[in-house]
Structures are given as structure tokens and as C-alpha cells.
Amino acid sequence: MSVKNIGSIGGITPYFDRINYRVKGWVSIDGIVPVLGSNNLIEKTMADCHELAKKNNATRISLRALTTKDLKVKNEEARIPISSELDLSYIGRNEVSRTNSQRVIQEERRILENLLSTTKLSEDPIKRVAGYKIETSNDFSERDLTDIKKLFETAYERNGRIVMWYKPSQENIRKVLKNSVVTVARNGEKIISLTAAEKATIPTSIGEMDWYEMSDAATLEKEKRFGLVQACTFKNMEYIFSNHPSAVYGEARACNIGATKSLLRLGFKYAGFLPKHVKIGGSRNVNGIRGDIEDLNVLYKEVE
Image 1 (tube, rainbow, N blue to C red):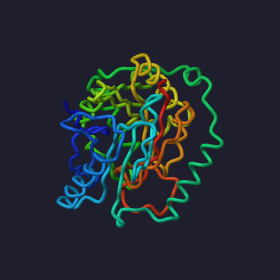
Image 2: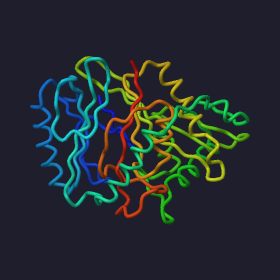
Image 3: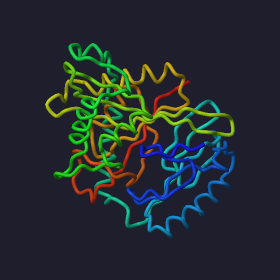
């Protein structure tokens, strides 16, 4: 079974992601993700990925592994508790050329620490946006897809360019959203805000597990600061948790205050930091970042 697609969760077997100049995948055996109690398979997979990276001039290796609670993992960047016995480990390594300056990293850390200490839970996100229609669906008309494409062009614009991990054509948007839980806010019939959680069913040694990654959030510029993303994400969470997920998490841009704050306000917890992880556009609250590839904060929602 494979979950490789043009979305953000990606495939099981490690492969070269040419958009982000990285090798990514899961620590697995024959397409199955085992529960690991030692580092042996992780070290072998990292060595194989290093060869694949050299072959393709990739500057980052990014792996995920399902581990026991007590396993200490080398090069671990983030860790999400899955159950009382299991964790999801993010494992990564960058070339020296693929790093932000210490000043940028320190500023992103300062923003995170401030958010962790000051962000309060959202009390009633849906009530706050009374007057807008909030609905969960992934069946969209051509008109809807035109609205969503404009949303993405707004959210991921930088210096006149649209910077995303896939080309946001209407056909690609349709494919990504088909594999996602999507909640939109409408003003009349027009879609003005959206959040999406990509779903992947991961084959593991203890059975299939359903993972949901908060992958997109966008609002038209003139509709911002009304709490629409909060409301859409809250509604998304209601649907996801009604389907008994194995894991729910997000990867938020570390240089953007709103991305991390939105998830913290809905009860997500901080799990780690992915340096120079993915190419992504949008506004920045930190100056001096080189290129379009950004650092991400990993956050998760408890499922047990």
C-alpha cells in the first residue's frame, strides 16, 4: 500500500522530493511501518537515504518512524505521542548549506515561546463567525475550485510569486482536497476561507492507522481577523475526531505568528521544530530568511 501523492504526508518508501530538494519517507520494511524498539532500522534507513540524497544533490533527509516511548532517537527533530505506548518520531538531517542564520532561528524561537506562554484557548469559534456558513465537504464545483485557487494564491504569495509544494492548478487542488477533510466558510455562495487536513491510512505492523495533517489554511485578505480559520479548523476537528483518528497534527510556519497561534488556540501542543523543511510562501514576521524553504513548528492534538 502506498500513500504517495502530491500532498504533504507523502509516501512510505523514501524518495527524492525534487520540489523541496530532500529525501523523505518513513522507516519501513516492504511498505509496512514497524513499531521500533531500537535504532537499528533507523540507522540503516538513514544510510540508504544518504546515498539517495547524494545521487540527487538533496540537502535534507526527513524521515518518520513509529517508536516505543522509551526509545531515544538520534537526529530527532520532533516527537508526537500516539498512545500510552507509542510515539511518532520525526528524524532529520540537513546539509550545512541548508540552514537559517542563528538570528532567524532565535527570532522564530522567541515568537514560539511568546505564543506558548500567552495564547489562550478559543472559547466558541463558531459563534464568533455567526453570519457566515461553515461547512465540511470535499465535493466542490468548478466555481468553488476557482474561489479556492484564489484563496491559495492569496495565502502563498511572495513578491508576486505563488510558492507552494505543488502547482496550485484547479486539477491539482481537486486531487489534494479529495484526500482531505476540508471545511470552508462562505459569504453567500463564495468561499472566503478554508482549512484542510490531509488524510493518509498508514500500514503498520499493528494494523492500519489513520493520520490527519493540518495542511492548508487560507482566508481572503479583506476577511482576515474575523476568526474564520479558527472556526473552519474547529469544525474540521469535530469531523476528524468523530472518525477516531490515530494521530492529528500540523506543521506550522515558524516565521508566521498566525499559523502556530491558530493551532494553539484550538488546544494543539508543541512537539518540535523542522529546520528548512518545505518550500512555502506567505507573509513573514521574521526578516532575513534566505530563499523560499522555511522552518516549521510541529504541533499535535491529543487523541486519547
